[in-house]
Length: 135
Ligand code: HEC
Image (cartoon, helix red, strand yellow):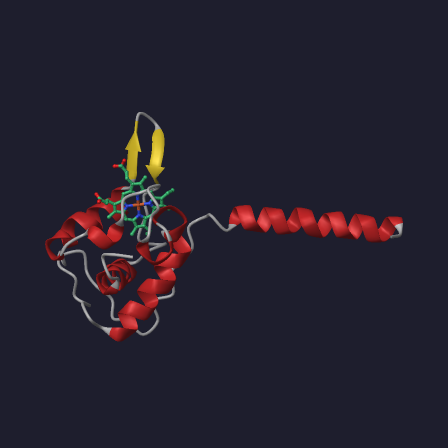
């Protein structure tokens, strides 16, 4: 391998690593196709809505799965979100907005609405509702 090729190669590796790391940053959710939802909504307005479930799956995979696990199978790192029940809507919304910070340790980052608009928040909940509780 020539020296130029070696340099190009290591640059590629470095930028791939940087990308992989940057991937963990919150990603704005594309909510096209979903109506806007106000702040006065405390129960999931999208239960069973196919479009919402699709948007929610993408949003979950982009922003939640790295801790809560693919398809909600957390593997013990973070709580298993498949176990949230029907009555947990308001609690769920509150947790996503506030995150979990104790003694300056960020267990879960807060997700503001410029990253996860209300419609995306309920879309994620709609997706979680579709997951079976057992493996
Ligand atoms: C950096 C890791 C991380 C990310 C990313 C993350 N969470 Fe969490 N989440 C946690 C941890 C850890 C807890 C438990 C915190 C504690 O100790 O109380 C938690 C708790 C929760 C809870 C409360 C669960 C319960 O059973 O009480 C909900 C709801 C939740 N997360 C939803 C989400 C959603 C939705 C997303 C994506 C938008 C998300 N989280 C992204 C780590 C994360």
